[in-house]
Image (tube, rainbow, N blue to C red; front, side):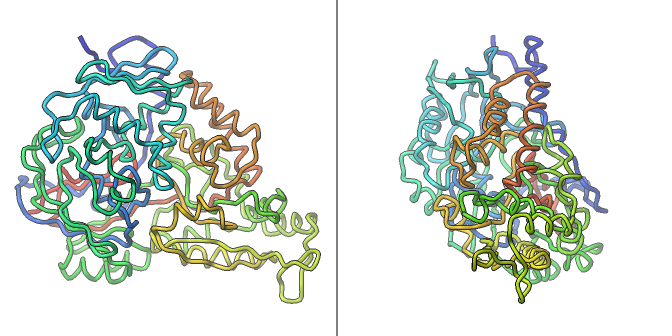
Amino acid sequence: MTASPDSRSPRWAALSALLAAGVLLTACGSGSDGSADDGGKPTSGGTLTFAVGSDAGCVDPQQVGSNESIYSVRQTVDSLTDQDPETGKIVPWLAKSWDINSDATEFTFHLRSGVTFSDGSKLTAQVVKDNFDAVPKLGALGTLAQGYLSSVKSTTVVDPLTVKVTFKEPNAQFLQATSTHSLGIESSASVQKTPQQKCSDGVVGTGPFVLKQYVQNQSITLARRTGYDWGSSLWSKKGEAYLDKLVFKVVPEPGVRAGSLQSGQVDAISSVGKANEAALKGGQVTLLRRANPGVVFGLGVNNSRPVLKDVKVRQAILAAVDRKQIADTVFPTGTQPATSVLAHTTPDYTDLSADLAFDAAKATSLLDAAGWKAGSDGIRAKGGKKLSLVISWFPNAATNQPALELVQQQLKAVGIGVTLKQGQVSQFATTLQGGDFDLVWGNVTRADPDILRSSFSSKLANFYRLPASSLDTALSGQAATTDTAKRKQLVDEAQKLLVQNAYNVPVVELQTQLAVTKKVHGLAFDSGSRIQLHDTWIG
């Protein structure tokens, strides 16, 4: 007899608690509870047209990291588990139940029977094994999935519908990882394709929608999967999705997206900026908001750069940034300044607002102590070399450029020259991998604090070139313990080390803000503040 995880021994209470996300919603008038759902009887059929701001250049869920692309490709794959966005509880999806050994090194999943991929092939334990075995070969774009499966020892087929994943060391984060789009299950045929082929052609999944057409930088079109009958246990509708078709149009200019919504050309838009809020409020439009858990928007520091190896310079940058000014000036109403490297909606978040207080005098003092002297043009110099840095950024959110222009002004005020270098969204991962950057603007969403390990451990991808230090010990330790109190203490320590050493410069929490017309119902956020469209209908 199989059992759901919360019906077994007391140790499960502890492990379930440490995986609970405690995600909060931020208020915003009508529809602010995170779903566009104001009654009426749901009807099937119709097309939802959704305008997004950018295209990551890839339609493989296992390789996509940009929210604007995740919104669409997420609908094509299911995951072994799902995570309740309100409680953080891990619940059944493709796996009807699971067992975890006492030290969280073995995870055994019992799959639902009768699940098929859109090419007609069956979901089996072998397919899950094929997926997990292929993750290390995904390359630069697969870093999230690779982080979730780091230290995996083996994936074993126990029987046709039972698969066991064994790790070399305790890995408490893995259950939550199985709820993410990054470990969405793809057909064995898709898994055998190269990462590049999967990016350009898409994949075959078991999801409620099927990819019909992808035109890079223009549109992604999905169609309802006929016969779908294995949705997440969190979804209200059983069986097939309501909508016939989903069309995601790439519309980079936020004002044009807002105008398209108001004119009825599209039904929903992403990345609603502050400048468009007033025009969209009221009438036939509902604004939906939710704070993203995970690593906040900030400056990823290349700690191997000669100038940035100096902790005083990094700490000066940290002190020179006025986070409240940026949040209030650029971002949607309700956006919070960063108070840690983790957003406040992430499990085991620690409030480090005192360490992140704006203090231009402190920044000036630190730069003086590091030997950087003010020049006639206001930019500091040492040994004939100016204190000039380049911030690399990518247009996957309308707030990126104005936020960085403010950062540029704030750093110049203490004598740090900044050049802003825009790249293509599709170049984000390769930029990190190549290491040719000083500072890079970005965030990573995940409703589990282990996102710190995959982002900042020097033992993993280490895109930010951090030196080996006690931070690694804390990050490895929190992933290895099933003791909730101990994990919280280690995550707390990791946050403090990251901020106090300024290995990263947190700036502002990402708040996802969408706008939908009043005819859109049941559009809901998932635990990562992305969207779930199986229950969405138009009427």
